[in-house]
Length: 70
Image (cartoon, rainbow, N blue to C red; front, side):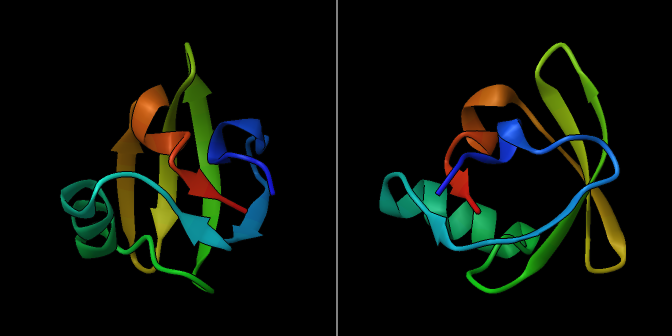
């Protein structure tokens, strides 16, 4: 498994695991980052990611994106 920060712009990946404390995992789940969900990387700026999750675009900084594994 690799962290979401390793995905390239335009790539669509399937989430395999979300790590971190309970409140971090809950926050990411509320944003749509759930196991077996798909995420498309829209763009990357200085390690921070713009992601397409379901019908929404979400920005994650590098530390949160490293908690989502594909």
